[in-house]
Image (tube, helix red, strand yellow):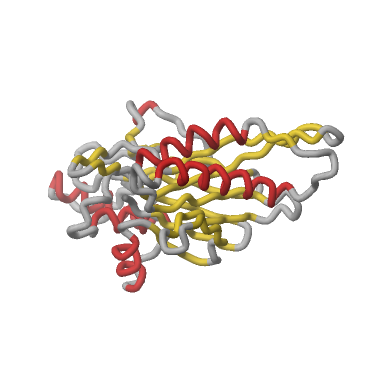
Length: 275
């Protein structure tokens, strides 16, 4: 399973997850759970509309791999009639029907428990939209619901996130997810690194994050993208705004001070160093 956290504030949305795939008792910590798909809508009279759609999932890995492969093909080739103008509804119907068809094929073979989260900007109003799609075994039907404003959690690690949120552990979504992974307790189905997606007025994109190892001799920034660390980060120049920073400048200075004291026994603040 997984942990998904969604922060929805007006027309800006962040989604974060861990990177652990669980297959039986086997855990793989480099799995992709947040991804972007290009969507091309063709109207014979109005031409082509290009947009991006974000997805995040928790649940059965085999089921969602199949979903990802199908929805990629579908979204690249959306054809509407000349008089269709409710593109939001058409898009949601396509995604929900893709999920439903896969459920019909798979539910007697594999467990389809889990959620698909969908993020895109409304083509009618420009507002940021977020939905959850899931299979309800009681109703034997696929349910589509809008994700509310604020902070919401999904997946097997949702109880861990709820507990930390209740302790006022939220600073930003990356910092919060780091705390969830650090204090997950006995929840072995979550782990690995942090993955982040962002829906803004420019569409959906996948982001990386910048972190520091407080105990390392190499205190410089470490960059992570998706499920893994960016290699040779000391020679890596990230695109501005493409990596979120976990700690504030004041926190980094304090961490650097403690790191220097640990390694040298000298407090740089006493020497007036800016470290």
